[in-house]
Length: 473
Image (spheres, rainbow, N blue to C red):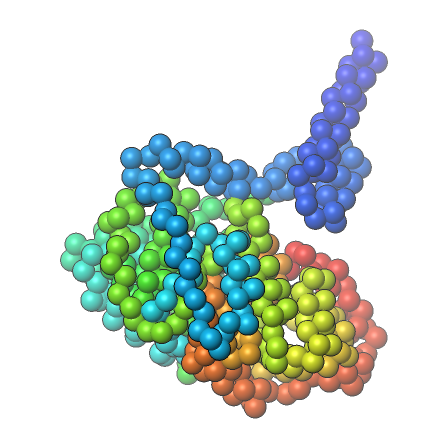
């Protein structure tokens, strides 16, 4: 009997291991991920399989697909979308038609005309504008953020949100449950008992959802005014504070694209609470023009079938004729991105990258430095901004096309997180953002091959070791 028991147990473990490995082999598109999970399932009986089913299976994507199937039968389902009108690019931007076609194919939201985008530097500019919009709200306030600190700045926002709720405004707030842990008291605690409806994105559980975070920053007031970019809510973004912690850039958005910011929030609200809100109550059917920019909202995340942002970034680099400007706080590229940058540089495109000299995540900076030698050796200009830590992120191609929003150029943003970006086809805005890049370069220090070669052997080993963990940083 003992032999039979052990034989059955061995057979069961073998079946679980092989079935889990087979599932990974069929469903994982990245061969490195597939190989890792297959080896884990086979070489670590039971525990490898448990680890795979708890962390390696994208249940978020499965849930999103189920919602799409259910949407057609829901009484508040939005109407079938009308065929997209083809908005012609201005003559001077026609060379970007292939990039626009790429976005049309991978993004469900259309490219919309008549939008305005106003850069807001640091909390000193962004927070007063956001708070004023909240104070003037009449109908609805929808706020989604990764970090919502309970400090002085956070309390200004919670107080304003509570006052709005008392006025009868429908106020909904989503905070990522990992980002919520950055401070005490939490925004949830400060808003408890008020009329503000609060949702936590993917509450943390042992072994689950540590990587799948909502990194979006969205504020939409009355469906008319939007704010988005890279800025969270807290004293850390007050650059004139003592000491300054983070410098950043946010954007006030007006025009038809605000409706797509609103829809992104409504989708996230349903994801968090299970409540489907009637879209017609919160998305303005009348879309007043606010400016001249052609803008598309790009919502991306692990619930999507395609890596939209990654493809659009690669497409933009391949379309560049003269120059590409990139400002990002975290730069951990995969091989396709490195190849795209090097290929563009070899075509004669001038590529400028501005990174923070001081990074709040040292191991990310170490991994970044391990990638820079290849880029600099092919003529890509890389600069390090002086302290404090600069969290600003944007990309400009030829002063014509700009990408702004929450995503960084790292695996976490482009593969694991929920992100929201805006792609902007507009010369005036593109040249404005290029000017900001030039200002950053003027205040920065260039990173040369001599700097990279001059690192000591222990430092090179440290950076190389950090690079090994790039897919998880």
